[in-house]
Image (cartoon, rainbow, N blue to C red):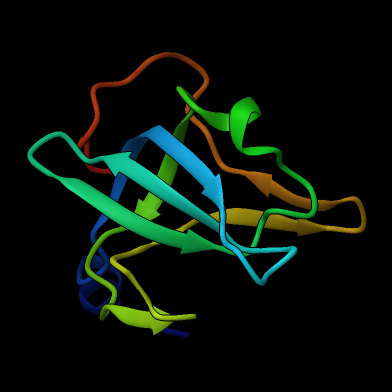
Length: 106
């Protein structure tokens, strides 16, 4: 169990995928350009086996925005998208109606 104070430390926001491309040398990683309202972020995500880049552009997703940045295959990932792990692959968590990029999830 974590405390409510610990939960409040998580900065989960809605981001809009503005660009997506496969990363050379990997069959599962995609490089995403995500609009978080006040800024664009690059996120490297392991969803490429189940999601084609052209199919997710324009989608709104949930992003953990205050995760420490990490370098993956030489690319800086500036957050993490949230997805449900299923037998059929990752299911992106998305709002049920359009929400402004950068909206905080509480």
